[in-house]
Image 1 (cartoon, rainbow, N blue to C red):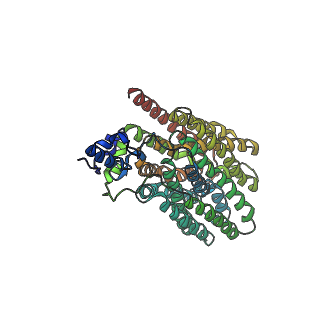
Image 2 (image 1 turned 60 degrees about the vertical axis):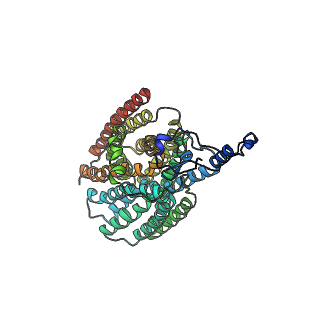
Image 3 (image 1 turned 120 degrees about the vertical axis):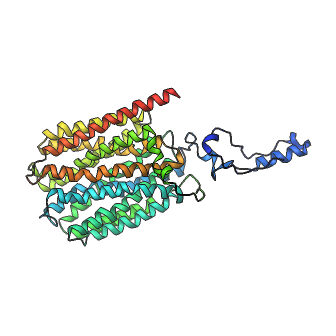
Length: 460
């Protein structure tokens, strides 16, 4: 007689086998005792499982896309990115403030290391955040992010020395930002397929709203008291990160304990040409992606724009970013995602070189900031969705982590290189060219990825 056993065969080799649904056995089988017992035993199985994960819940082509719970997860992603990317989006305000106050005696290149280490810590933390999310669930990662970002922001209020700012903002708060980004992102990936671009776009719009709100809060209060501005910012971050933790759910069940296979988890993905080329593309993009948002305010001050108005340029950048994240995320569901990604990256590079290069008036800089924000927002809304597009659903968190760990070195080098180009003479022309060229180079590699992926799909 057959038994409902747990096979250890990999689910990939059996993913297209039908799952037997739970229904009442037809009366026609009543006369066949042996067959009836066998059929009943099959029908009592809710799933056929492979590697301890239900087969019918792992297909990347059979995700719910609709219902309350998936969109609550998107709300969690929105709140998570409000805190994480929202905080990173206003690094330009902090750098400009530090140059005029706590770190006035240091060079722009030295001060930029605070933002660079923050971006690096945020991206590199994906190596372990993604794996923890896959094994223990994304809520644990998100809850850790809530704790670290709140503690890190509160610590900034007491910082007076350069190394203190590096520890508080560059490491502690950045670890929190990583948890609040990678936890909800891994959760969203498991709930959506056809509307994945829209889901990521809506979640990513939280980054722009966060950048707008946090920049306005800081600007309105920093003039009165830097500590009060940081306290209020920390309180807002805590509220939104708590909501993110409460609404982060995993669709996939917890897998059984498995040995930590370093090569399989973090090396094998890069043996795939599409994955490795896309990583190279994003590495080049990261070399220039954060340069405009970090230096819009400082370069505007150098061009003679009043300081208060210069700090507001970051807000205009985030307004453009909001629309880019939502609209381009929605558009990505209706066309080739990699082709769209390469196009918007190319345009973002052209906005920097030559348009930002030739813009020196306040009005022109604002237009460039909005345009740059729009296309940069599209890049940031899509880049994790593209990793999910080329990854098995149960490995999305780990693969996003491996991907982010590599591109984090681009983020680490980005702002110090830009700061060194500026030097001590305050000339930002070379910096603008650098930002544009790196984005254009990344766009070219992304176009190659789109071409190779199209050939693979056509071949299949």
